[in-house]
Amino acid sequence: MLPENDVTTAEERKRYHLSDGATKQFLFAVNALGEYGGETMAVIYWAGDMDGDGKLDLLMGIPDESCAYDERLYLSSGAAESVLLRKAAHTHGSQAACGC
Image (cartoon, rainbow, N blue to C red; front, side, top):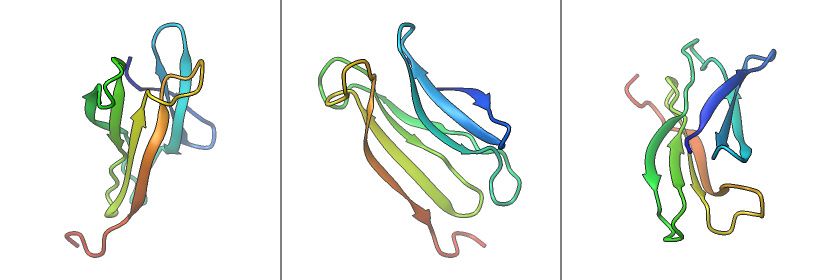
C-alpha cells in the first residue's frame, strides 16, 4: 500500500492516491511542473507503523527546485471509517537563499 501518481489532469496537475487493493483514497494534487519547469514528484521519506496500530503510516515530501518545501505526515490512527490515512501534519513554505 503505497501512493501512486495515476492521473495527470488537463490542468497539468498530478493527483496522488493510496490503495490497499480494496479502498482507494485521494491524498493530494500538485502542479505537474515546478516554478522553473522541472517535474514535481512526491517522495516517501519514511513508511512504517509510527502510531503503533499495526497499519501503514507515511512521511512524505514534495521537493521543489525553487527552495520551497512541502512535507506531510499521514497516520492511520484516527482515520475515518473507509479511509486509509488521515493527514496529521502538514508544513510548507520556502527557504530564503537556499543555495542561489
